[in-house]
Length: 348
Image (cartoon, rainbow, N blue to C red; front, side, top):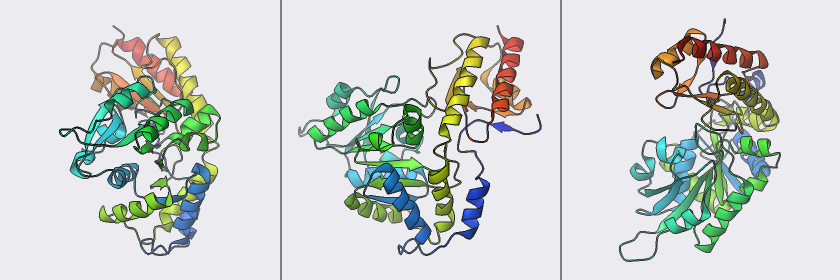
């Protein structure tokens, strides 16, 4: 194997040649002053795709998430989040440290948000209770699973939010994976939330940025929060140009990643029944449990690396493999063959 197959994440991708060309030729201006035409083009395109009034280009999904919380909540509010969500587990405690809110975490079973559980988590108006300021969903759910939250489930949660006059926000880092996998227009998902963010750097392979979307009032406030966090950019069109290519050309091919992930999962199940951490691979993420091997988790990871494969360790002996545009059919065969070799060598 001459090259390294990095399947730790779909964020490790290199920008396409078309993205590099677009970045080199981008027409730019001062984004803080609202004068970058390429950023404006990206934001307009995003509004058309996701069905929202306005959008703002930000540096990352984490920044987008925290801006949304800052806009929708006030100091001391509670925010309802999934217990395995990115916003709770992988944003360095920003809900408390930056936004000044506390998290009320709920279990999300197999990518399904229980409406009754969410409604019961909404705090009352007693003298000792704070307010529930926001309900945060994530789709696809869970960084290590890629589970689709259905449109029906999202609609159900939006109704709970409306009933209690609480906004619903979507961390839609991989929402396009969900839409493509379900064969639906992404608007069928996004119409059930007040605002959302989508990452350009994951399955879409852009080298930079996320988009935060909502109504005009929300985005006007979001731009202020972006600036407060140091997210103001100058000639940002260089980065936005890659995002335009990502939204125009990389969405339709996401199904290739899903098919390859499912092919890999089928191969692995034939090698060892029960190897998958979830029974069905729904998008581009395959999670393995290799607890039945006789070596420790770090050594397992090292064995993969010796064969030119980088996997992400997500548990004691659990690993994540994410398929992206740089992983081809022959690579799937190789990954499966290496996994089988490791299993045969170290199986208890």
